[in-house]
Image (tube, rainbow, N blue to C red):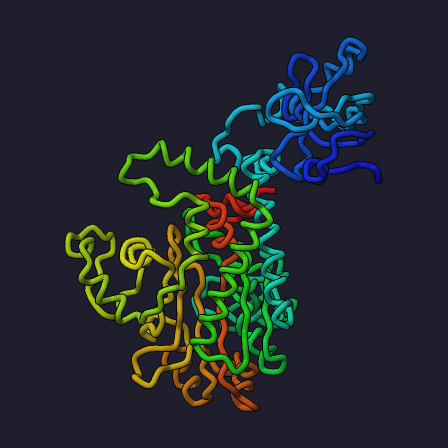
Length: 478
């Protein structure tokens, strides 16, 4: 096992001779002589040349699409087109047979819907191999970005009693026997008898706990799974997804926006550098997909152009109020082309509005700030106008909002008043309010949905295709 070399490392080494051991899965076996071998390290296959005249026919029959094999042989320059080197096999061992009549995958193009139903096998396709290598790179780049800046990686709880957003769309956690749920004298569920002695749920955000860390460590970030019990069967929503949530002491809204823009550019640039081959493959895949659409529905930029577009442009910054005026006076709004018409100040912006600002009006990524407080969360810092909060959203082409954040309300009286206005019980968040009682300071943070980022960088159209095992209404397979 220790002598094995991965195909990606072999192809990048520039070697053209020497004995070699490679292992992987058969992508094709032509003329009983040529094996296309892939081990998942790259989309590129390695050609294995088999001496079929001197190979046991029974062994040849076992070399089928999907079979796992070990190949010992000699590396040599390839005379055929499509590869620079090939391996002349001296020993072939089938590690795992694969019956081609029963194997769900076939050596042909499969629909994304079919592959979702076979998510346990879809990693073996070129498309999903590329996607999950890019996801891996982006994950590493996020950690590297924050670590280089001296942030502390904080693990916030998965099980919590707080609903950070106040939206009530949380999954409940209990160890009650559903057939014998204990109740109080008034008929309510008696949570005092539950495992934690109170009502608990899976986290919807690590933000509130993250703020506690920032109040001592200055700069922290979380990167972990979050859960929303939102009955949304769309291409943009998941019930389980990963969130990146930094919280920074002594930051204002402008500092927050600067960090968010820097993070996005850093990780996109990192992926372009480390996953050039994968992104070129996904770019080609998307171009072929675009050709099937009517001319007026095709994207103006290719995937690689869109990623470069975000790196080359300073993000446009404007207030929500300015954006509403632009949208209200826009041609699509006047001609009633928007599904959700923009009638005036206070409108909650939809994806179509966000994309118009980015793709049509400014033609660059946009940072929107200072939203009406009625459409934003209780913890956002209230502006002096009494109507807006120091919130920000970053909008990207093709996707709309990719980051949401704010300067947090550090003034205890303002925070308590806002919580009372929208009915959030202060006694349940006493620990959160304590950070405003003892050594409060201006601070800010944001949330980046990791799958939204992967969706953008890979050019995929469905968020269920950028997480290994998607969780959504009526589906928790695998």
